Image (cartoon, rainbow, N blue to C red; front, side, top):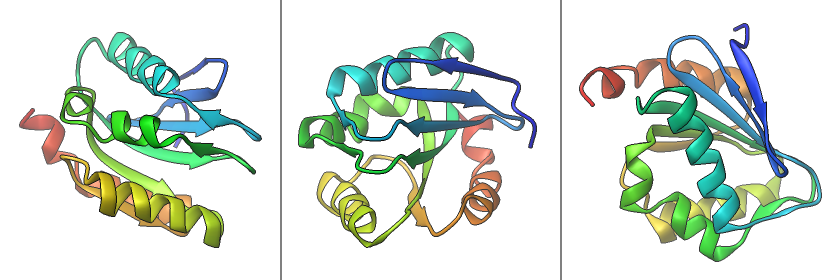
Length: 134
């Protein structure tokens, strides 16, 4: 999938792909804050002119989200930006952190974890009706 365009922030790159899919990659060696999660949401809202996105998330080495950032990313309010999330997990530690996000914070939208980008993208494409009904 060719990127339509990329917006870079201090903590991540937000790449807009075909089919309402947005890929956010958080940079290496970073603790993501709630403000940085909101900044990512603001970029998505601005670039998509308020239309929800299907989000695939990748995270660099030694990068995680603070508990407050996870809570904000999974809040009911965050659903006005994101229709579904696919998280690409890179290793066991990241898998544990992603499980905490999914099980403890219980996002108010479909969310799945995947071992690679291809499987994540395939699943997100199946979630496209969520955008059309939003």
